[in-house]
Image (cartoon, rainbow, N blue to C red; front, side, top):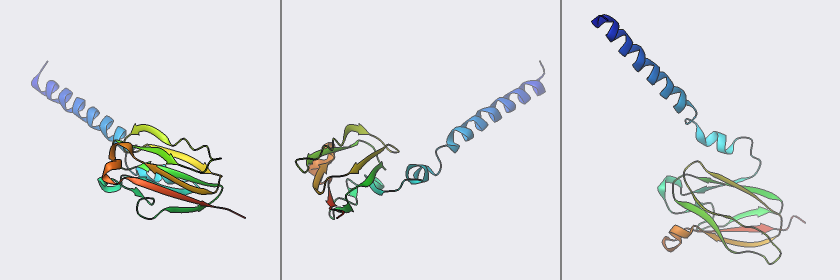
Length: 137
């Protein structure tokens, strides 16, 4: 095999690897739109900009009418949604497993009242959230 053949094969091999990497990364770009497009509800960002907050939810509660779907979208790693308090007749389980960027979790709040939740790994840093569900009557 000549040096020209070897160089051509090396070039083609590298081009193939680059094309495969580009194709794989294509699914990663614009990730936010796929996490929120075609979703008819409220969005709560989990750990946006690597901050230990829920946005909205930390500081100011998310206020919604009963029957509203909420989607939590993880913007950084090592977070969960652990329910601490909810109305007696509500059955919200949260998302207690630890997840990383890109994960989503949906729940539709049907029972009016106050819901309090935390990120267990960052609760001591103030990563707590509240949802206030108002009666739709």
